[in-house]
Image 1: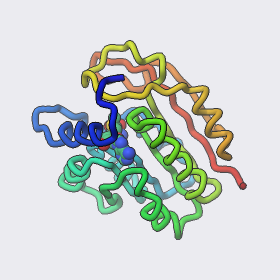
Image 2 (image 1 turned 90 degrees about the horizontal axis):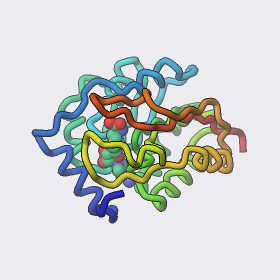
Image 3 (image 1 turned 180 degrees about the vertical axis):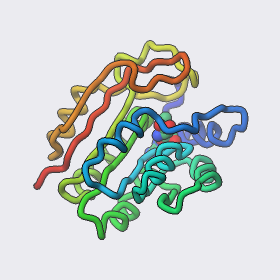
Image 4 (image 1 turned 45 degrees about the vertical axis):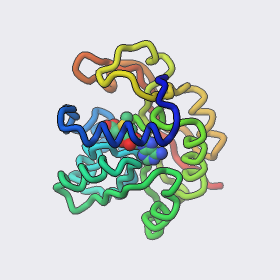
Length: 215
Ligand SMILES: C[S@@+](CC[C@H](N)C(=O)[O-])C[C@H]1O[C@@H](n2cnc3c(N)ncnc32)[C@H](O)[C@@H]1O
């Protein structure tokens, strides 16, 4: 983990990252987005947390899904709004701790939704993760699905394409236990390499798909 340790530092890092013209950000959807889109069982609405440059939200919207995409970086959201080509996606500048109201309004008329978060869990600290988990446990209709992909503990020593910045490597098994304790059942989980390959970096990641059970 790098010395960038306060939420304000991390936000400044992401704002700088998305405002830089010299960073070649991937525009194609991630492997995880393609996996998720072909796996969603009969849902038509997705909330993405930590949408970054919007590549996955944009792709999911292009498949016909209604997408609410949130990110705490104003620069990221500005970038997304500039490059969007779909009327199905709405980008909101919103940190997870301020997202309860926007989430509530989005799910209000929906039977269930997918919450999609790729490379988001390891970008937030434990306190923010607790806020996120509480939001998922209390703010989603029964039957809603979680699709998460994150760097695992085993990835800590792997050389990174985008260099050193805050990454909180996730304990895959512990995350699954946490989700179960919050009332989610596990539909699918896997960890390893080959799922998030980017040029010469092949991150060790975890994926899980969980369903919110009847309380
Ligand atoms: C590693 S990037 C992942 C971007 C995108 N999901 C992808 O896979 O390409 C993490 C993203 O999470 C956002 N983020 C970090 N903390 C956040 C928070 N508390 N609330 C919402 N977004 C946050 C950052 O601004 C950044 O865009």
